Length: 305
Image (cartoon, rainbow, N blue to C red; front, top):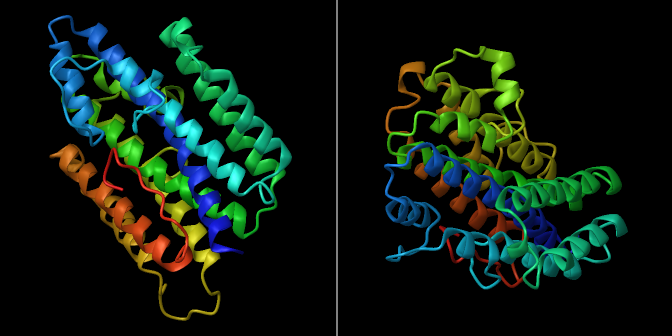
């Protein structure tokens, strides 16, 4: 596969996932603000910008910067536009259904249409459209190298954005339902209640989102998906260990989380999640050097990429 096509597919997965997860992070932020009327709204917004790798401003407009501004590097509108551009570059590889879904979504949300919607409705529409694109990719593309690159990009982006989402309770002040909002933001509330019951603790919520091997948005599950994609992309006759630096980085991160003592799960959680974001950044650089050499590098100027 040509490196430019592989890179375009990798970034389609990343950008679509980024658009969806940005919606989830902003929705959690807004709900936490409603729960705690004493919370400093401007301070919480500045903290959120810093969490996303952006410079804090005095009076940030969260909806504008994260949602409506096509030029903002952290807005989901920007991510959807970048996904469309990447899909255009790989038009001969992505299925017709995937291209049409990305293009239709982009045309439907640009031009001020989102501002006329209630935030809750807007978030739901974007999440559902991103889910449709991901589902079409999984069901209308051959699960060959191209699909593996798309899956790899999606998994690394999900790791990065979920780690940021798991850091938001530390920004929520005295919000009593911070972890409930995080669970809902990950689409995990129903699965969590089935697993732990209604009287579970905050530590249980963190444990579920980090360590559950069956929930597709948990860190452990996503690390496994990324590692499996890298294994399938690499040589199949290895007898010792992967020779891929990205696979080693992600494998070490998975082992570090998987065998974390239960009492240490919430100890300095934001710092641990920041380390995982660094791992994602380093893994992306390794993947780019190995598979995309000679292609123009795609970068996310809003974060660590």
